[in-house]
Amino acid sequence: MEAETLSFVNYCLAASLFLIGLYGILARPHLVRKLMAMNILQVAVIVFFIILGYKSDATPPIVRHGDETPIARNYINPLPHTLMLTAIVVSVSTTGVALALLIRIHRRFGTLDESELMEKLK
Amino acid sequence: MQQIFQRIAWLPFVAAAAILFYAARDLPTIADPNAPASTHVSPRYIESAVAETGAANMVTAVLADYRAYDTLGETVVILTAGLACLLVLGAFTPARSGPTEKKATPYEFGSDIVDATSRLLIPFISLFAFYVVVHGHTSPGGGFQGGAICAAAIILVRLVRGRAPAFRLLPTYTVAIGSIGVLVYTGTGLVSLFFEKNFLDYSGLPLPFHGGHLREMGSLSVETGVFITVTAVMVLIFDVLTMGSEE
Image (cartoon, rainbow over all chains, first blue to last red; front, top):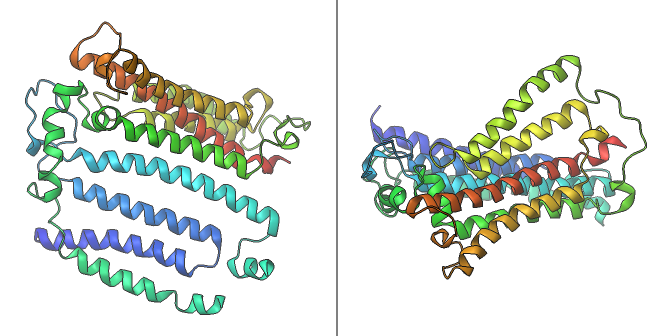
């Protein structure tokens, strides 16, 4: 398969993951499922960034021993990796806070279903 | 009202799908070394990271040296998330945070086999976590990764042994440990401030090293702070979320 088609397929896979997450957030009534969908959405963004950082015939962004003058062509782009490293940690933290809020909601209302919650909030 | 929202939920979904798949056609070819992402900012980092920061791992160089301010904010975000979990679940109220009277069974979650295996594994997991932090400049690794691995080891203990008193650490103490990590980070920055350099400019640290090595030591100190915070907050989140289950 030629490179353009292959990249299009890859980008579409990342987009599909994003859409799965978006659909879950919009259409699923259960809050835990919404949270899981949000995590899938974050993973889609991470995958997309990592795809962008790749270069053909390049090594991971760690300078080889003895390489005095590193050339940008020989190493893949370190910036998406740095960004996604922090994104992963933040996503873990936000998931933790979201779970704490869900536990709190469940203690108060006894349910995590959106429509039942709306009934009880009336 | 709720039903209407449920029914039209596919509308923004279809719109987003159309935009994303349309935009995917215009993105650069994967692995193309001449793509904009690979030719604009990153060559500067790749070509001068080792000379300027002494870290062979460019990801660590960018994270702990060039963008140290951002990482400081990141660490504070993590600590804040831990604090938010603690506050949301009301762990500060004495009834919940006090030690429970219930007699701890030897294996609350695990069994003999799981216990024996985890005893074998946990020392190595912890050692690997420290290796990942200390060696983060010359190989893949760093404070965030090491912190996550170390937290995994501690959470494994909690999963296997239950929350027996011997392994118990009150969430309020865990959050204090997490704050120590942020303190180490900020302290490193402040030390260079006292030696007439900018905040987090490691070339001002009073250590017997020069050039790249000195900066490497500075970012190692910062990574240690990140490691402490990430470990503490991961354990804290796990503790707080599972707090209700033992009652």
